[in-house]
Length: 288
Image: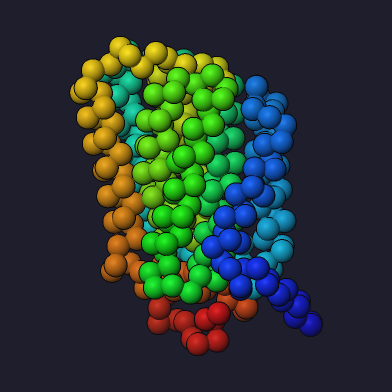
């Protein structure tokens, strides 16, 4: 059977950083229906995000084996993804101490959390990171793609102010999201699949939605931030810094070669069936 022709991606080759950044507005096209107001709109955004990823996979096929397939064993996926427990536990502690821990589960929160996990990973990591890991020609490119994706991911949370979110609390959210972005990007880089990050992201958002009484049914923080003391900001800072350290640990120097090899397999022209990362199993023909 004749091999499928590999497309030429001129922008990626000429300016990888611009190509990476442009995936963000591309992902934001899934949000054209506006701020999700309920179950149906959240599910539509989730579905559109998955369709976009399927198109993305086809566009870079057969050179790229897609955003969904992992290249490490399940045990490794679970171990790497456990870094998000820092954010989940920190969220519960903060809500319990300063907001009065609530438990208000709803179908709406399930769908909003699912949408956040799928759509935000699509917008900020699923498409951006593979381009960086293929076309960036810099030393320690894993670190570079983590920084680029995270400094876009965090500040864009400031747009929540436009839909009625409390400004100070939104600034805090943006800062924590930037630090959390390091962990989510690290999970993607270490596994080769966006799915673990989507799941971890959705689980965190759901727990935050149902335990924080200051979040409304639209998933927006609407509380007055003036009733918290300095200790609140100290804990927020501690959790954020811990997230940042955890993210940096996932992509530490001793793991750089592992990450590079995982992504060389993902960007191989050859179809690698059920291939998990094994440095000894790779040959020069598998390296892009």
